Image (tube, rainbow, N blue to C red):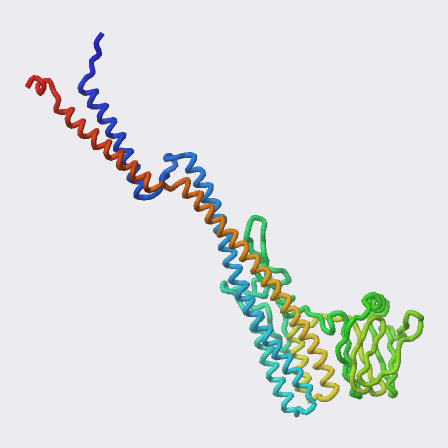
Length: 409
């Protein structure tokens, strides 16, 4: 049995082979040009799926990286602003200490009041600082652009919220990108932060209340819980006694009324508290002692300004300024604590950003391994395929010329 192979079938087979070779050459040329092994999903369905998955992971990581950059910018602005606040508070404290110099004239004290007014207004401006997006740094989640509003009487109101803004910097990971104005400028305890001792404005002696502290926390807590507050009273001979909020004498552990004889520079101690004093009290002079209350820095500065403009001097002025310096120090402590927190958050951002940089390299390498070609291998393969196609074309041309008549000839 003989098998005949028609010329048409031979031609068709040759054309099919050359077309397949041409397609392979075109594909290799595309790989060499684009440096990509996968241009469409059909090139490698499994590889394309893996590439898509890696691309999604990289996109998600980039969103977190962008969030970190935005948070860093916002916190850098907060850091700069708090540095400026610290400088102003330092200046205010220096001026307050200068103002109680007994050699100053009334005009000098009024000049200091003017400087303190400028500091108050600058602090108000800093409190309303906005970030690069125009959002208030210290407004919390309120969305207001001016969380601090100055009232007609010179006092300042906070219109922001007590809730911090947060940014998502990872799966299930958030970080605060700001601090509330209430925690920095408004809600700072006066006195020593636990209790406040202040001389009565009507005192006629030279008594000045100084620093105070809790020396026995248990005795203080028990005493304040049962008494609420205290009033220390002096007679003309320097003797002092203490009464509770109801006007009853305060007694010690043995049931004896607390009190004693005071001399200039002595400390007065009872119920776990110690209060430093200087000067000489007049008969009937009193000192009020109670739990520390929140006092905003603007109110503190206004109290200083009003006292300096009032013409007060001597013990009266010293008592006001000493009390306000304590309140100012409380605000300074709040600012310092906030700066520490901001620094810690920025360190966290830096660590997270570094981790994402490493992940980006790993993801990029993995994606490259899936989608990219080895240039040397691809060029070598293209050369071989091109040579094979050229050879097939030459054979086809020769085969076309081979007919029976050529053979007989």
